[in-house]
Amino acid sequence: MDDHLERTITRRGSLLALGGLAAGALGWKVDTARSAGDGPAGIASGAISCVLTPELTEGPYYVSGEKVRRDITEGRPGAPLSLALTVVDASTCKPVKGASVDIWHCDALGVYSGVQGNIGTFMRGVQRTDASGLVQFTTVYPGWYNGRAVHIHVKVHVGGNVVHTGQFFFDDALTDVVYKQAPYNSRGARDVRDSNDSIYRNGGSKSLLGVTKSGNGYIGRITMGVHRA
Image (cartoon, rainbow, N blue to C red; front, top):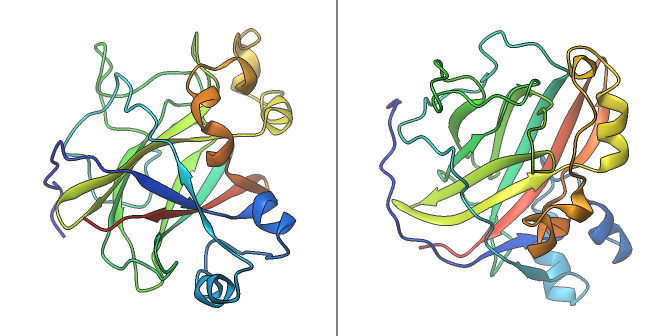
């Protein structure tokens, strides 16, 4: 598998398939890591629909040519976080196989690799979706930096085109718990919560990760519905 992926500046509207609390409100309980197959039946019955999610800014810390890999920690400390991200076709909610999912975020101390003189490639990586539309990453719960709520950046590439650029967010109450641990507690209080974040206010509530406790860490899940290029 190549370490570098072609990226284009083509961006199209994307959809985020209902999951977690939103799906629960409609009576559809989803394990977004593996049960995307429940989507078509729900759509056919009229019980489930996909909802338009605004594109969220790429931000200033994107670096092209990230490594194709599952573990992106490079030994950096922090609360373990496993991500299970599923890509489905927004028209049918069927899994999209072979999509490239590109994520990046700051480490537990709020530092991004590869920018502002910071060396390394930690907290950056790409995975290609399997037959069920799933990619998985091993990382740590992100830290914070001035002016932003806690988040993870994402791009989805299908057929050589970027079909979604967005950001994942975390429930503030969960972040409060995580940040009581080291190394997060070595810093002062974060200055921005979700409701005060300018990006979150433009659609971030539809990009909240569903997070569950797992051992000494967490599992974050979400299903992204995209229009194929």
